[in-house]
Length: 204
Image (cartoon, rainbow, N blue to C red; front, side, top):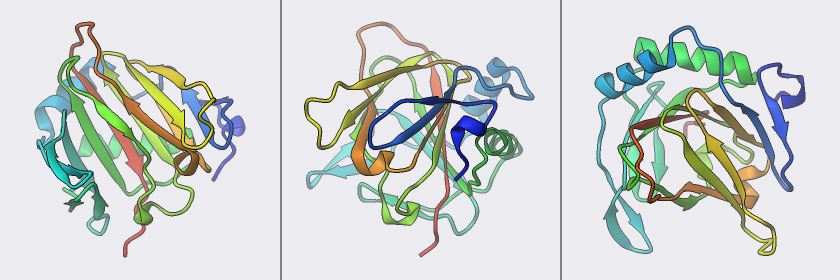
């Protein structure tokens, strides 16, 4: 994949055993507040149940999966067949591809309604993502703290990044192999946040 150091929109972030690049506010064709309002209103949000340690749990957020027809994704006991791209999602995909130099055929949207919604620590290391997936995380709305923890180096300090409105984080290289990431609940009141993670699915 392209070297983030050569992508003008992104700045590399130092991380051992992985590769991160970040843009605090990606220039977009539409105002961010308009994009957030459209995403909230137009997305076919679902509250799926996932399997963790053999038990079924409702996800503590709403989600949706869009992409090319063959971009079927499986994780935590779910099989997600993609909904067709909307004009807005295609526009955002094109803007993210231009910023990252990567190609994507799908996007997972997560809607964090308030401070109680969260994402548990995990790695996006499913087989259909390939051995070194590039995942571009685009956020709108209320900032939330994104935490990465090394899988092996227990003494390594967690990496924390405040993902604000319009921010873009690119995870690539061995990041998914060596790191887990997530978003914890917080005691501070939070308003709506929508996060889009653009991915390249390799059909089975």
